[in-house]
Length: 244
Image (cartoon, rainbow, N blue to C red; front, side, top):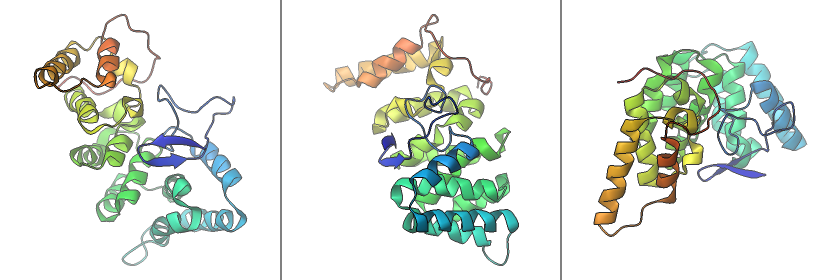
C-alpha cells in the first residue's frame, strides 16, 4: 500500500503494463487511473463483504443514475463508502460510484456542495473521468480556497492540469508551498512550469520574503523554480488553459 495524497492512502494502482498509473505525479490517485483499472485494483484488495457491497453499489448506480427523491440511491452509497470499504479505499470506491452513475457536471456540483470533505475530495478525483470540458472548474477553484490540504491536493489533479488557467494555477502552486502540500501532488507540474517566467518571479519573491524574515525556504520551492527553466525536460501532455 502506498501513501498517495495528503493524509490518505489508495490501492497500489498500476497501468496495464505494470508501471504506476499517472502522468508526472509521483504516485497514483483515483484521478489518474482509468475506472476499469481502478475497479480491478480495488476489487483485488477488498475483502469479500466489501467487494460485494461495491458490486451492488455500482450496479445500483448504473441502473438508477438519476435522482429519486431528495437523494439518488447511489448518493447514499457515497456516504457509506468509508465504513464499507475502509478509509484507505473510500476515495476509489466513491469515484467508481460516481462514474457508474454517469454523473455530469451539474450532479457533481450538487454532490460537492452537499457532501462531506471526503465526498468532495472524491468528486475532485472523479472530474477527469467524467467532465471533458472546463465547466467543473468552479469546484476546483472552491477547493483551492479552502485550508483543507487534502482538498487542495485533490484539486490539483489531471483536471486542473488540463483546464486551470495560468494565473490561478500559479497561485495554487504557491498555496501548496504555504500549506505544506507536497508539489508531487500537482499533476503535470513539469510541463506547466516549464519556461514560466512569471511563476519563477513569484517563487523568487516568495523565497526572498522568507529569507528576509529568517524563515527557511522549502526544498519544494527550489524544485519548482528549477522546473521553470526553459530547457527543463518534461513529459508531453494536453494543453492547459490560456494565459490570464
